[in-house]
Image (cartoon, rainbow, N blue to C red; front, top):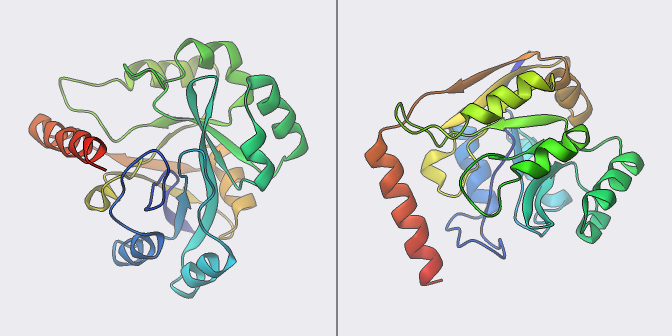
Length: 224
C-alpha cells in the first residue's frame, strides 16, 4: 500500500522554534490532507506520548516520535527515538546509539543548506551513520540547495526522501513521500525507504512564497 508520509515536522513546545500549531492540530491537518504517516521531530526535545500515538491511530495515521538533535552544531533527524537520544552529543555517541537502537532511522536534514546548523562536511565524514538524505521542500527553479544533497545520496547509495520540515502548518504537504510498505509500522516504513520503495512528491516553489515564509519565521523568532 502507498502511504503518504511526512517524516520531519515541528510543533508547539519546540524549545528552539516558535511553532503555532500543536501536535494534535498537526495530526488533524494531516488527516484532512490524506497523510498515513507523520513523524514529529522537535529540536532537542521529545514531544508526544502514547496518547498522541493512539489519537493519530484513531484517524488512520501512524505517528512516529522522533527528534531533530543538534550534534556538534549540526542537525540530525532521528526517528523512532527513545529517551536516551537526549544524551547524544557527538557523532561517536550517535554511532553507539545507532548500534543499540536498530529500530531507529536517521536522516540527514537539509545537509548542504547555507546555515550553521547544516551538516555539510560532517555528513561527508559520517555518512555511514545515516539511513537517508532529506530532499527539502524549500527550493525554487533558481535557488536549490538540494543539489549537493541529491548528488551525495547518489554517491553514497542512500535513499533521498522528500519532507516538508514543517514549521508552518500551511506547508505540511509541500514535500512528502508516497511509501509503498507492506504494513503501516515504523519497521516496514523504514524497510521500504531503505529499499527505495517510495516516490517523492515535491515541486519548485515560487521565490516570493519562500521569501514570505522566511520573513515570517524570522519575525516569530525575534518576538517569541
